[in-house]
Each structure stands twice: as C-alpha cells, then as structure tokens.
Length: 388
Image (cartoon, rainbow, N blue to C red; front, side, top):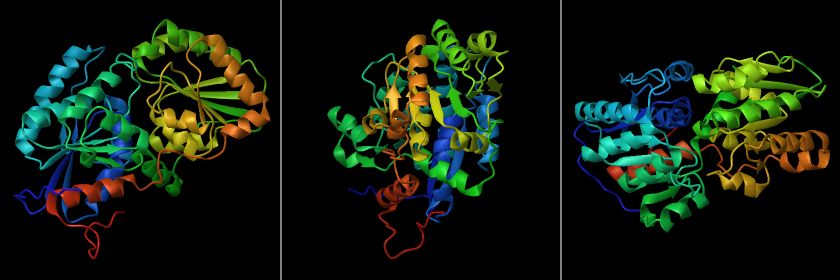
C-alpha cells in the first residue's frame, strides 16, 4: 500500500460522492456515514437525479442530504442525451467544489460520467464495487461497457470480492490500486434491518412468498412480457403470493401491467422505500430478480435467488449455490421456481445463509484506505477514523 500524501488545502479530505440512482444511494450511504463520523473527511453528495422519484425517496429515507442536484432526468430520454448532460453538469460541479477525491459507485451512466468528469479535471477517482464483469460488452446494457470504461480512469478500485479483483488485475490494473472490501450493500442492509423501521409488502400468512424485481433494459419488451407470463403461471398455484414492486420506467410498466395487473395472487406495488424493501426481502421465501444488488442482499438473509438474466457479473453467488442463473425463457423461469417451491431438499441447499459478498464492514475498509493514501494517517492509535 503506497500513500499519496498530497497537500490538503482545507486540512480535511473533501470527498464528492456522486450518485444518481437508488442503488447508488443504497451502496454509498455507508461510505457517507463512515466519512461523516471521521474528522479527517468533509464529504458531500452530488446527485445527478438520473432516477428522480426513486432517488429522492431513497435519499430522504437514508438521511442523505445532497450538496448539489443536477436534475438531469428527462422523460424517455436517450442515453446519448443523458450522457452529454451528465458530463457537462458533473464537470461544472467538480470545478466548483474542488474535491480531493471523487467517489463513484457501480456501473451506471452517472458512475461512468462522474469518473470521466473527475478525470478531465485532474481529480483522483475511487470506484466502489469495482471489477464486476460478465465478459459480454452489451449484456447488461449499458452497464458492462460503463464499468469497463471507468476502470482506466480510477486510482482506487474497491472490489467487493476476490473474483472482482482478479478481473481488474487481468486487465492490467496495478494490484496496489485494488483492495477487496466486500460490498457496501451488505453494510446498509444490516444497518437498515437493525433499525426495524421497514414494513413488509406481503399481506398473507401461510403462503409461499415470492418477491420479484424486474427493470433491466435488455429484458424490456417481449422478453419481459414472457417473464410476466411465467409469473402469471406461477401465481396460478394456490400456495403462492407474489409481490412485484413496479419500476418507474414506462417500458417496464408497459410490459408487466397488461399481463399481471389484474391477477389476484400478484401484488404489483409502487416502488418500496429501502426500509420496506429490506423488510419484504426478509419476509419472503424466494426471490426472482434481474437486479444486481438483490443478488448480493438475498444470500445474507438465506433467500434463494433465481436470476432472470442470461449473464451475471456476480458469479460468486452462483458458485456458492445460493443463486441460480435461469435465463429469461418463460418455461425455464416457471420450472425453476416450481422446483424450488416443491423440492424441500433443493430449496434447503440454496437457503443456506452463505454470503460471498462481505461482512458488513466494507465502508470502514474504504474510508481507512482513502485516509491512509491521502493523509498517511491510519486508525492505529487514533480515534479519528472510527466509523458509525
């Protein structure tokens, strides 16, 4: 580990946490809490508003106040227009705020443009959840491209797993710039559940509770309609209740509502705030999802996951036996769900609470590494890096 020790103009490390979507808020909240608890840091939140309604709800619930809100969201916007507005707005924010480090998370367009804007302004970048790869440039779209573009611009690669770290080093990243931390989503999930403030969206007792999340661009259209058909068939069972929080995307709603909107055993609900989502996840028996974050959260709670995608950048869950990559073909989706609901042995094997994504201390590791590299100070013998 080599320290940078640049002069800090304000005596504290000014860290700009750039986020624009609900998952970014969830995964950067523990980093913000850890930095806020240390006198070495002056954190600020720069919100792009890429997912406006869901993001505002999340920031309020997690008590995250944004220093800047770029408000880039437009109805049914194209990626090219979104990218242009993000680079321009984030470049202006970096110039005005003069951070010592810009922190981006994951693989969104906000993360990619945040890293690029910082790179253009000569500000070092830290990437939380670095190194995830499917090996297929267009799947997921545009996330796989985004995370590959981010990597060359980054000074600190905070990888959630050894596999993610290996991906980065295979691409030529200096091992000294890579640190395996676990995933901050586990930090936040445990923090939220400890508070007990969430409410489950399930309403029945005695039924098998299935939680479904769907939103990915590559699944929208006919593919998502096929998945909806499979969910309708699954909901024909007399022992099942399905809860599906509807993403705000019009394309997602156009695919799901005509097929599932009137089904008596499918509860289509508005997006849950994270506290309620965590409680719903904790209460369910089975998860069907195309989300990345849910693949990480569910194993912490011992919930088997059926991944509704043809690729995953989180193979650790599949390798650990707590998730199964089932694809998007309706017959295969329904068959996999039926099997787990009917076969107690198969269900029990997947329900073992083995989480390959961390121990809930990822944010602590990130803050310690940044503090050491930017100031040369460590936690040993000092209290100023204690994290809440």
